[in-house]
Structure formats: C-alpha cells, structure tokens
Length: 177
Image (tube, rainbow, N blue to C red; front, side, top):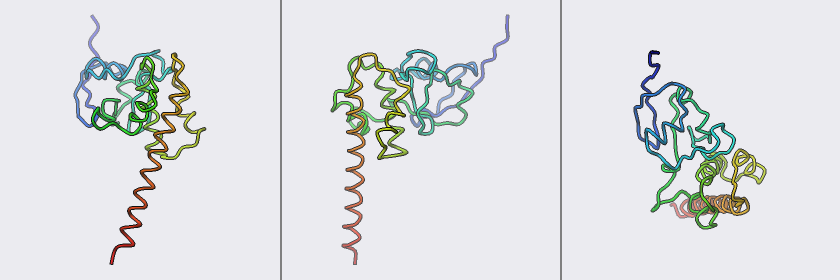
C-alpha cells in the first residue's frame, strides 16, 4: 500500500477561508465542486480548452480544471457564486440575463467570469481585447452573438456608471464653498 500524499490546504473562496485535505495535484475544479459544493463551476474538457471551469484567482480569469491545488498558493478564488447574487447581480450577470445570452447555460458561467475579470482591470476594453478574453471559451449552442452583445452591454453600463460618478463628483466640487 502506498503512503498517502494528501496535504491540508487553506484557500479563500468567495471571501470565505476553507481548509481541505487533498493531493497537491488535485485540480482546483474538483475541490470547488466536490469539497466546497460550488456547482456553478463546470467540468467541460478537463484540459483547459473550453472555459466552462473558469474562475477568478486574484481577479484573473483561470481555468480551474488544469490548475493544481498546490499552484494556487495564497490566491483568492472567486466563482460565479461569489460574483453576485440573485438579488444583487454583478453588472456582467445582469447584462447576460437582459440579453438572454445563455441557451443551455453550460458555458455561460465561465464566460461571465472572464468578462467580469476583463472589465475589472479594463472597464472600457476594445472589441479585440474582449475577443481575446473570450478566446478560450467554447459555446456549442452558438449563442456567440448574444454573448458578445451581453458583454458589450456590461461594458456600456460600466461606462455609464463611471460617467455618472464623474458628473456627481464634479457637481459636488462645484457646490463646495
């Protein structure tokens, strides 16, 4: 019988600290779905090629199926469950609902995580940057046009929110004695 190489890992997922015992090479996807019961993260290809398993680690979109637990380090993980809620959706989630961007929905969570990561670091990405962020995602239902429309809607909403904040700040500055 081979000795166990399982280790205890501490990880932060959706702002909550967790302890898990696993093999160091266990993909983060398995920990999220099986140990933490976060089913919004999907298993697609298992090779990092389809994007269904995309989560954010320290704000960067990563495929969790090919990220070994030992490589996570102290990275903070955000899954679709931590992005927003039914009562307070993230702007990207709301845009995808408004544009009815999902058909079967299998790929959409990963796509939304990538779009949210993109707009967090660049609120006004070009179409080329948006397409690059979505390059590792596959949608077999063919809702690509609606997905792009939803992403562009989220970008436009964020731009409008930034403009409104800027206008409010200017108004407050002008009103100050």
